[in-house]
Picture 1 (spheres, helix red, strand yellow):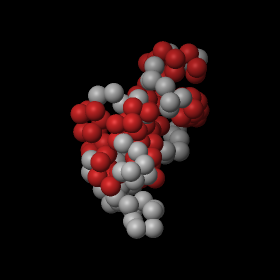
Picture 2 (cartoon, one colour):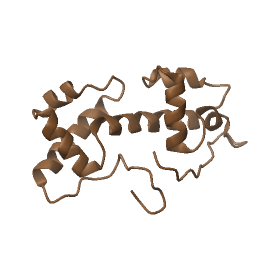
Picture 3 (cartoon, rainbow, N blue to C red):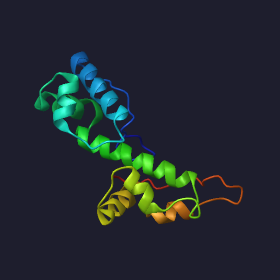
Picture 4 (cartoon, rainbow, N blue to C red):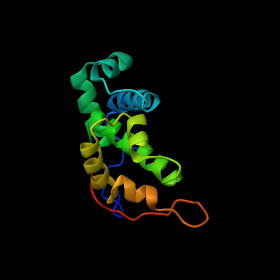
Length: 143
């Protein structure tokens, strides 16, 4: 986390005293990033890294400060946010974007989104400048 943004940093680079855990966490993160379009599976993540679920959880928490599933969820929320900011209300619907990124419980999605970005998904979608570019936001709220 940075001083200006207290949200967890799912993009943070691995730095630790344990090179083995750093490498393991990086492999897990790479796998998750490549599979954002699917559902989270700790079993598949464990198989892809050839490591037990428990060791993988410890390594991921040490390096990224959160569980693999929390990182995966944060990345999906970030992608949803990015897509909503890139379009206007005439181009896409929040429901369609949420479904595309695997969010099927819309109330829970909206709550997680608001916690992460400080506004509702529909507010993000409506926030456009007259020249068509998305406006910058300043949430600063923790996840």
